[in-house]
Length: 193
Image (cartoon, rainbow, N blue to C red; front, top):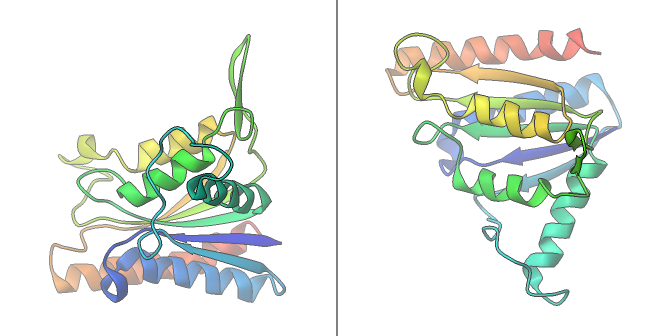
């Protein structure tokens, strides 16, 4: 079993999504001994934003190939996706631009696009300063729908979210949101075991 662990928060030790991904990965490894984990911190080591490759000697091309290899090899992908300004971080978008490649993870056919990266399980640790899953701000959620859409385009249908919302509303609300999210992780992983 190969697990790819992605973090994208700029908040380091103060990051809610990083704490959630660590809890998910730890629980997964405890339930699946021998799991091989590959870790990529998109904030500490950012990828160059997408551009036309300069050729085989381009270091960005080599890194893009490594990112693709990590994604394709993974059975499970755990992504820390904090909401920044109603969407995802630019570092996570740069990673997605490296894995959304025609001929590798999708292809165009006479019947429309076809995802080629199916068979993976993706667990997304989502953290949000406000409440966006329901209520008046729900229409401003461009994070979760985007991630579902782009991963679905690549053929991934097993997508689950662990969500901590309202973490900027108050310290008490943050603690409760994180506690609720962490409490759901064990059940999420046992459910599919």
